[in-house]
Image 1 (cartoon, rainbow, N blue to C red):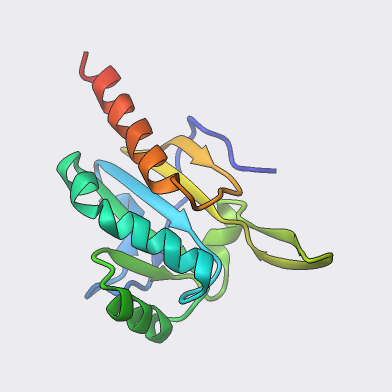
Image 2: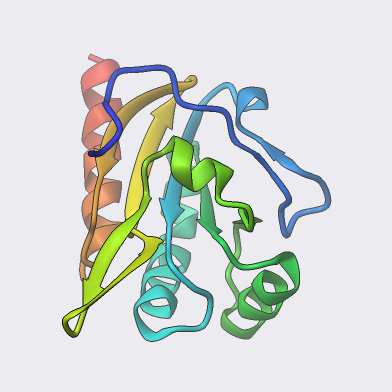
Length: 158
């Protein structure tokens, strides 16, 4: 079961590839958080590169962008450097945030069932979940998310 929209976003306080911990409560504006399974794997690399290509556009509309996986900071820093990812990656090794956002669950791959990260994206504005994309496919996802946020901003500004 996915998390509801139009509710207060669960807290995020995680180690970051930035200089300090990332704390959602300290961000007063828009944040896009994407949960992905593992650094340096084909789908996750593609998704991170797509968000990286659009980073300046997200920044232009004043939307902070962060990625979260269960990988540790050492792996994140290597992944970030290798692909020149311009935003912070957050480490959730104990899966507390994954579970709060209901993105840790049963998956099936080639007939095998296992627990893992369900690739999902959440758009938060002023601490409230506006939109939740659950179990996403990476192709065109970053641009679709950007278009949604842009439309959301335009509607709010009218």
